[in-house]
Length: 531
Image 1 (cartoon, rainbow, N blue to C red):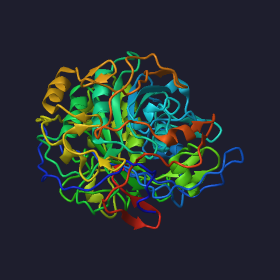
Image 2: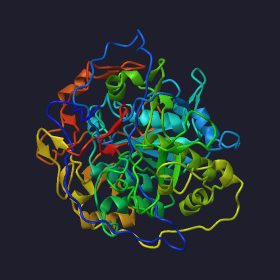
Image 3: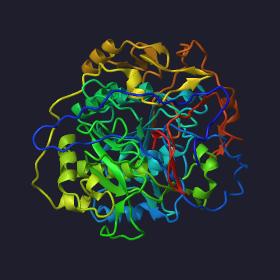
Image 4: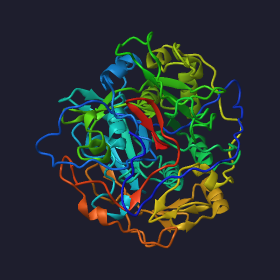
């Protein structure tokens, strides 16, 4: 499946050429790391349940999250993934560790315990419909959340770190649509609110978003926002993308090789042994730099959001009533984020450079095609058995002064044929120099106001199904083209307890891309954005 689109008056992505890339070294003996967009896929499935309304298939499906591979010939339970990465017998469960998931929101489906979920601010376009706020209409964020903290005795699903506290920051709307500036605002929010829950401070960001931007790390604003998280004690765990060798690099921000833990996907060949594992054929690679770690990312069985965009578009991905099979570096990033929570639980005083170096120093070898493009397979058991290794740290940083437009790459949001481009955020003019100063001072957010513009409410006074919820707000500003935020389709959607009761996902906000869809097999397609 390629280039599906959603909606009538729309938000979409387009292709532009960015500046040449420059690499930097990290301190001591550190190897390059990468952040990138990831894509997800889910495999063959059973019928929808009789209690769900009939769903019409999407037409023209496309997404900035590159949720591309929602079908697979076999399924791998998360409990098997835990065995493969050596965490199943670790005695660790992520207790006391907070993980921020910047994605498409989460839905209250069976297997996602409310006690482990916090709804942070909803920065997506759909936040302007209060009945859609925080909820995952796309189906991507919930699938990743299930991999990290899911716990469903009925299906046997158990996340890699089921006792971690997951804070969902929704930036992707119904079709997954999002602008890079919303992702940047989310990264800024996480840094300023990382210690709001002293019992579960946020130590990890799981980011399965990216663009095809060719950018200079010295200046890139998205790199700057990611690096600011690292500076403040948070490990960015980023999917390395699903473009194979087509791009010749990882996606942005994964291409910020020094500032994060980049994660690739492996094919397990249906066994629990790592000896036969190979890098997934869809996995983005860079001929000059290596992905940090690889983990199982094909056919991962996780939580389904009935009636969501992905569920409607890929009915063959369903497995019973509650699960979907998904493949991509998105799923791999979620696995690695859960694994990082286990190491932070083991050594709670560790900084992110320590955890990242710990993983890098204890990888297991990978064989097969393109194995040389990844440092190795992540192994929690090997890490726990190792007490001595060299810690590497970032030696130089982005200054954030680079072009916002370049950071978008070919990916642009369009609303009623008005493209968001240039040095603008979703409300229009963006004062970039003031933003850089505010980020450095940790003042870009003041309550629910980001850089002087109201995006959300002012504190933890909202209500939802989760254990705690950040308040929402109505945007009084017009968009970048002077248009109102209303979308007629919002009124046609509602959450009916266990599924989305919506005829389709058409609406005024949508995403498409002029970037060439990559088709590596009959079961794989991808675009840039959410992976």
